[in-house]
Length: 452
View 1 (cartoon, rainbow, N blue to C red):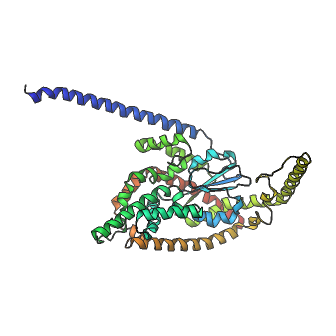
View 2: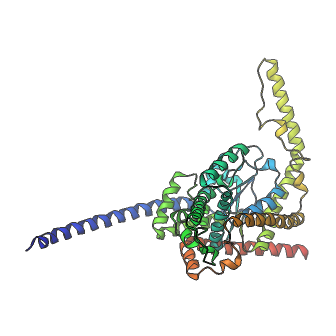
View 3: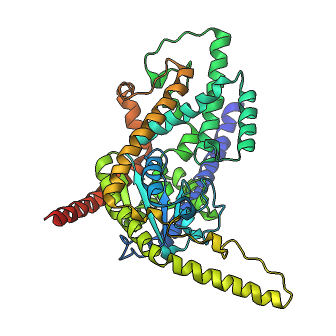
């Protein structure tokens, strides 16, 4: 036996032991994840479906899934129904407000369903809109680049970041860079765009491709985008994770382990899908981006009509409530003054904070018919401004131009990969379509009966 053959058997034995240990470790990790996911799912599925789920409660929580048209509903429906003082202080990151704020009736946020742990569960109704997952991935990719392209007016990335920081601090307003998931996606694309622009200048690169989704000299190709770890964590199956309460922005610590386990072992995703479906079952309204007209009509009659009814009911008692609180507050102040005590009225007790019939509830004169008329007018103006802003942004990376025609040029293999990467979202969307069809049919039947 020569020197080399003498070591073959020991090496094979060591290699076999290593493989067995590694396999055992992988199996243990899978079992750990399986237990974590199943325990979490069981705790969520134990919550019963509300019998009166289609009855609007005191607080309306609009769970805004990105790129589904939620901004349109907020500006063109909800702001027509709720005056600003009825809105909860909004947060598109993590919960930063007291949900017990007096007269807080509307919350619109990109926060996921874990927000419900911070809200009065029995007094909150949830609504959301879902979109075809393939279209949502396209739109997320396009919007990430569109917003990032706005920074290309600067000579370099450092200048862009410094200016953005100064503006956000000076204006003290919510920026796209403060909103989940854009606070992750836009900086990622911004850095990428500057890198590609610098390369074009230094290497004098010339554009060749006619595919806007594959112009690597100007922007990250779609295929590269969908396979990046950032997209795998945030974009794919994003609707399912958001409805289930498992995004990387979740308010619950245990949610992060569950999400990572599902992303690592895809077979465990069915448990999360079941939870997301149950969430939809419990919602007041589930709309579809693609069925624009049907969704808007259903929203107006299911949600809008009940909001109007609530405000009308509140309106009749507001003057009486305001007078009572005023008398109680000043009577209490006078009593303490007599005893030499300092008196201060908190903001939630202050008479000036109580809505009045002429001010806060002036929108109670709204009807469903007027709401729909206002909505149609509003969406036209909103879409026009959004389109113009997009055109201006994309000029900075011309000849890239994201259009419906350009989407049709994307290879079928890329589309199939998007579908595969979004298996959970595809199933959730199918389920949402069934729920919407049933609710929309009921709405139409009621309208027909009213006419007859």
